[in-house]
Image 1 (tube, chains in turn red, green):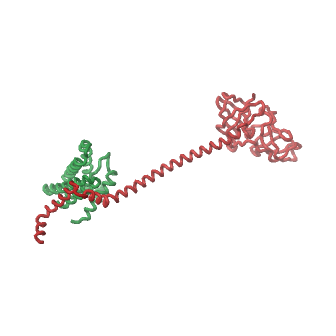
Image 2 (cartoon, helix red, strand yellow):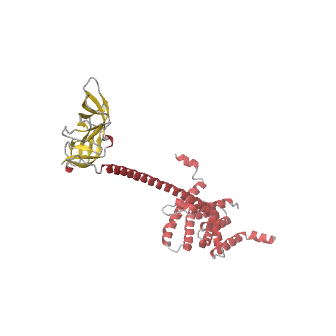
Image 3 (cartoon, rainbow over the protein chains, first blue to last red):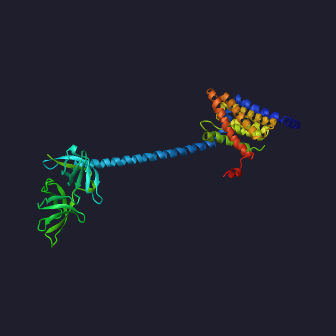
Amino acid sequence: MTWISSIFARYWRSVHLTLVAALTVALILRVGEINGLASRAVIGSFYYPFARLRMIASDFVGVRDDNQRLNNALVEASLKLSQLDEMRRENLRLSEIIGFQPPAGYGLIPARVISVLGTRLPVGATINRGSVEGVKFNQPIINQFGLVGRVISVETHTAAIQLLSDPANRVAARLSQSREMGIVKYDLMRGFMMDNFPTAGTINEGDTVVSSGLGGVYPPGLMVGRVVTIERPADIPFCHVMIEPMANFNSLEEVFVLKEQ
Amino acid sequence: MRLIPYILYLILISFHVVILADLTSIAGVKIDLAAFIILTVAMYKGELAALWFGFLAGLTAGATLPDAIGWYALFGAVLGLTASRVKDRMNIEAVAAKLVIVFVGVILFNFAVSSVIQAEGLGALWWRDIPAGALYTTVLAAIFFAIKHGYLTGQRFKSIF
């Protein structure tokens, strides 16, 4: 055996060269399954762990992208849902005022409130109808619940409204039951009240207050409010009649301008 | 011949092929890490180490192409052997000379491999991608040799600031 060792020792470089050359030739000539075997061995032992790592990283990137996309979709869906909810509420409101009949001799100009003036309680508002649509100064404004106010200035496509909640506004009113009259106004300290109502007058809590038509601005019979409390002071000849207005001035959206025909 | 460093080199080549090559490519130009490591082994280790490592690195680099894996192995072995002999015969120690060997070696290795496996688009590959890739690899080699030969040390780097 020593002669074999001596041959290897003498020709070690050639032996290595021959081995590499033989393997290379076998691979180039694709002897048997050697190519597939070599390829699978390298891929399975060296490439696979890194390929797996890369796949995991890609999955993470995909999850992050998905998360971002889903977040955007959620925001869009929430926005759409909110819009649909608003449309549903508007639909309900509009359904309520369909079929709303104006007082005899008057027509309705539907309008939308586009701005509101006031801090604690709205005192004025702007509607999206003006002189082009036939809106005129001093025309009454109502909604499906009752009297809202009157027009105090008119532009081409908008008009300004003085609401009942403006302390400077006064409405000549009467009780629909007893027909006794008074003046409805908004007092900054006490709220909505019916002024100038005699102590001896017939009045009960829950009575309905309507416009009397005597002021010349508001036609008779428009719902103004409902009596809430009655005080009869001994020292003055008038009652303190507190009323609750029919219209909610904090949630005005759709109103009607009463147009005399 | 200690085997562990060479196995680590092969793992590094695989890591580069699967993950790093795409991350470090600039406008489609990639570092040829397999050729660079074969040449580095050839310049710092013996002839037989270069021969066998060139063969195995060629197998590793060409593993995804079973039909051409033999050619990869052949050109890897030839590259390692030739670089080792050139380095020994010319007694090359200067960093600049080693960089020339890296640049020329990477170009020749890629020319040889692409002429065997690439059927079309050889023009663009030879005159644009391969020289640009060789240049990119040489830049990496310059950094590696600068660190290995002590031209770029932590102390020197800190002295800049």
